[in-house]
Length: 419
Ligand code: ZN
Image 1: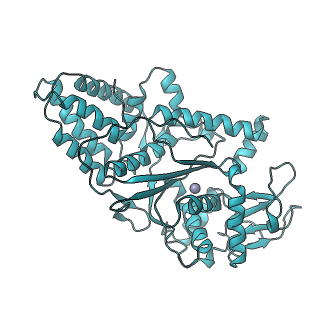
Image 2: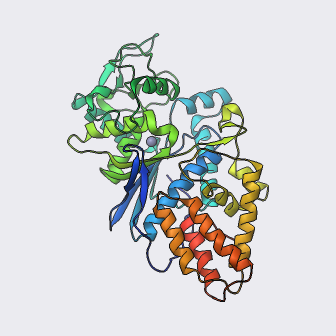
Image 3: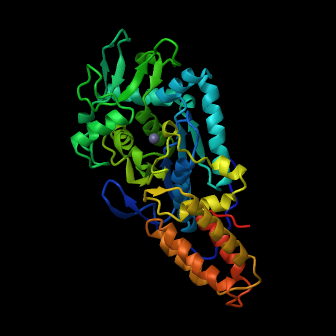
């Protein structure tokens, strides 16, 4: 499906260092991406049933920093993102509001595109709605059945027979992404879309691969699987295997995707492509953004919408600056003060890069590159720019090329467009 317009990314002199990132699976810092050639990135996309908000923006801006650092290090980046445009929460919301599920999805995807374009997020090369790739996902489920890594479950409460589940015990590496113990897995499975209570499963943790058709629900023909629709985790596995191959360099998403989503996605891939492992060389998870003391969610009514901030006249660059002033893995809270600080900083940076001269920009370029290569330390990079800006705005330095170079590096590496 259509993504969104790409921002202009200035080219900088020289080249950034190899990027290291905190990997959830090993719990440590690892080099990510090859020394040269093409780095591959899969970031799980939205389920478009709910207003796209600043918490979403935080995730995609965080991994946009990774893509920018990779490109600055001389790599090509192949980036794929899905949209879970058919799933239970979307269908439930559509029914509750009397809107066709396709129209609800499209309206929310369009809002998301607008946010991403405004925030200068470089779009993925492949932006794929699940409804576009049901055949691909169904083929992966059939492969799992053929490999003995899937089984059918009888219907319950008058429902049809034949829903297909994945036996988590079939992957010896199951649990290696999250490292969680079983009680934690059971709790999170129940919280995050799993169905541990479903009768007939071999293990309560086993996730759904294929849901056979129910009356009134969208369904697709899928050969021996029967008409139905795919489960969530296998969608991302199938898309990533098709469009990025295996292993991918970084599988990324918000920290609420560690389990079950990324754990299950990895196990599916290990069984779809037996003998190949791992699914991803690194797993990266961004922190959640809170507002009014709680994680943003529609049900709590505490959403901060990028589109509303923009409509109120807040500069897009200032919103992005508010995000990158926080470390991508940290849990942080959106407050009036966060926004006010970002707007002041954006104004000070704009003033400094608009001057006719300033201190030499080479050291700030090196500093920003070094901080970003070290686990995407954007707050450290922001501090390096702050120091140069303070000196420039105090009248120091006579390098006439420096303001332009700082403007370019802030744009290219942090994705922040100044005035
Ligand atoms: Zn995913």
